[in-house]
Image (cartoon, rainbow, N blue to C red; front, side, top):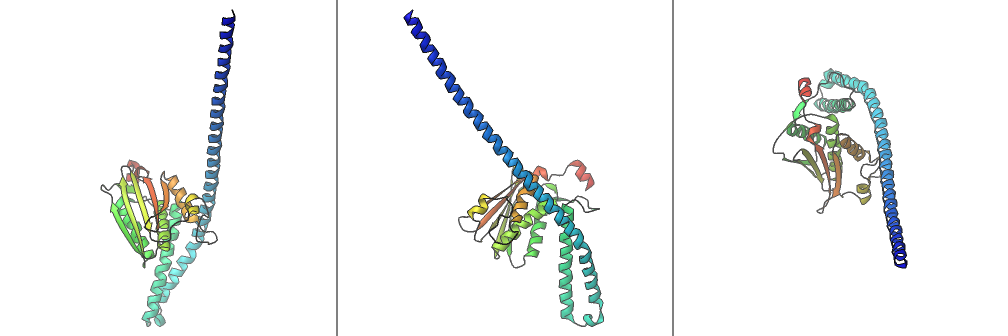
Length: 281
């Protein structure tokens, strides 16, 4: 009997130890799940706040674009009248300056139209069917005209071109990244386009001072800038959020040889032409 009682006590001790171990495991797992849930909720709240910030900025930009349209059109008409005035027609230098002003005014009108198109407010605009190569070439040509003093080199490694619908928001995203690179490296900027399976990877390399560790750590947050300007740092904030809406991603890093590199990765399916889109185009 004593031997059976001793075995019974040992069994009970083993059961208690096993129960204690299981409780520790379950409590630890529950705690880990709660922490993961809290982290996901915090990320969702942060994303909601960022999207609300973008909506407010979009409304502001759209309103400003509407307000700027009329005075820009008026300036264009006035400059056209000046070019026909006899007193100005005799002065070639003044005519050249008027032509330059008119070109800048029309460029501003084009930018305003692009803002409205990105906001979905442009009327009578059909989707523009193009290809990846043609789309990128158009963006690069536009940036070269905006930065005539900067050598913007384009390295295209897309073996198979695919038809897409030109997305104005994506065009502005690429323009923002190239503009930032040109500001940091006025001499030369290199843009590389590579197709990796079903992904389009666009890398923008500059030869500037590079990013600070704080900017890289807080990539995608508003007002995250090293320029020290009030309200600065919204460019990359918009880039990250637009790319996220398109199903893509943004990565920023410093190059060992000096300068920075920003990589935009986007699924080609996001821009692919669907049958109904092709009919509309």
